[in-house]
Amino acid sequence: MVEEFSRLQQGIHYRFSQVKHLATALTHSSWANEQAVPVEDNERLEFLGDAVLELCVTEELFKRFKDAHEGQLTKIRSKLVKEKSLAAIALELELNDFLLLGKGEEAQGGRTRSSLLADAMEAVIGAVFLDGGYPEAHSFILRIFDDKWPQTCKIESSKDFKSKLQEVTQAMFKERPTYVLTGTKGPEHEKVFMVRLNLPNGEIFESDGTSLKKAEQTAAARALEHLKSLNETTTQD
Image 1 (cartoon, rainbow, N blue to C red):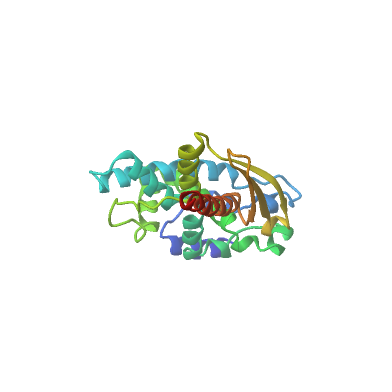
Image 2: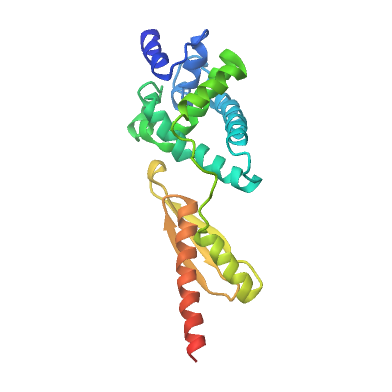
């Protein structure tokens, strides 16, 4: 394992003075729970890394885009540090090859699961911070995000379906729609979320998706299409 960690450290371009921090960062709770003796998992390091990552990315964006307002910077940061982005970086660094997973998690494809990879990426950042302090963590984050920084602070003006629907219902009914999670189905690694959207006028739209956000967006899109056709019919009359 020490030799493998040596290869990983070469890949991420950071040499730990205390390799135990890296080992902990790669230890998933499912593996730790299967051990005969207590073993620390990476959840605490993930918590630490999340905070360090947000601070470093915020600092870098503040320096790069001197004319950007707070809303623009927030949206750029959210895109950079979202689960999908961090999981992609984790795969680039081949962290998935070094994760310590329990038998069940391994069998269910945990090594390629975005949420697990993103958590591991944050844990490694936390480990670097713990090992070398903020300067090393800052340098590490700049390296792994080297080709990820946007060239401009301009944000696409198009809004998502939920935001558009909220604007429409506020204008039509003076109220916002509500979303209710009605249930889930499927195994943990392929869970499907079922959502009910309630419009202020009493109409209901149901949808499902591989995440709560996707299910809500789909329901909102259907409701928007319905209200659009309803408005067109009213206009014709």
